[in-house]
Length: 132
Image (tube, rainbow, N blue to C red; front, side):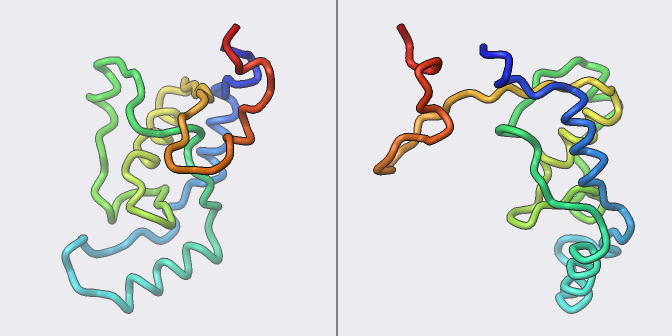
């Protein structure tokens, strides 16, 4: 692992603070039909509250201790404080919540294999990523 590929706790906590919303959570459940209210809430959140930078790297499955599951669980859509513009942002909200609660989180940039693309991933063209 190359040191500049490690995203430390401080950077993740800064992102968590910058992206936190909560000013105006959605007052209704996922299956209720409140399209006008939902659009209004989304517009207010976008305009006045936080940014929408995503959790660094792939925010799929962090390595966790048992105590994390006792304190932090996936929240319902209308309770999330870090929604995403695409999708519902469950993993992103959960990972930022874990980082904020335990003040300890690390992400590592790992080169991904790109499927069905014509060019190499520009982030990993450097010689340091080529195996010897």
